[in-house]
Length: 134
Image (cartoon, rainbow, N blue to C red; front, side):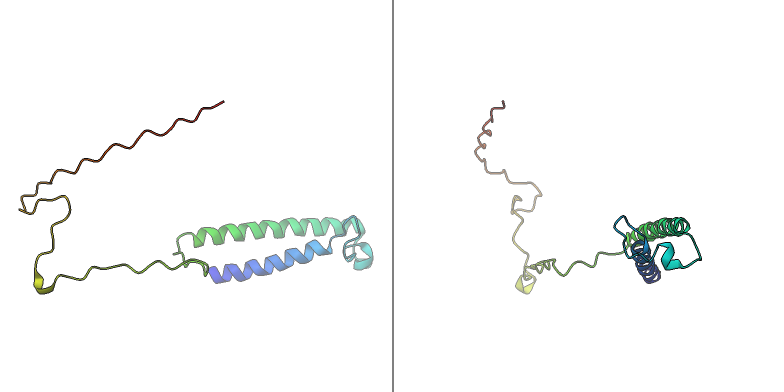
């Protein structure tokens, strides 16, 4: 589905670029959108109205397709960028040989009573210096 929308978006984008380039600007543009380029099929004013309306329709389709692709792509996983740094490998501690119990976690008593050892007292950090405001 996303591929179909992307290809359709590409075609709409190319058509929008072409229609904008066909319009006659104040400096003349490509000059194709004038009445001379269309022969006697349409007047200069009719050609300008047609190209303006076509530009508005293509711009609406462009925005609609962009929003649809953004909403559809929202739930997909992020593949990442080639500029992203790969995450460091997870470090795993080797298991203790022979199935011996590992050392107790810090802060627990070795007796296995589940109590915690008192935390060593640390000096309090000094309060931050106040910055005078004007």
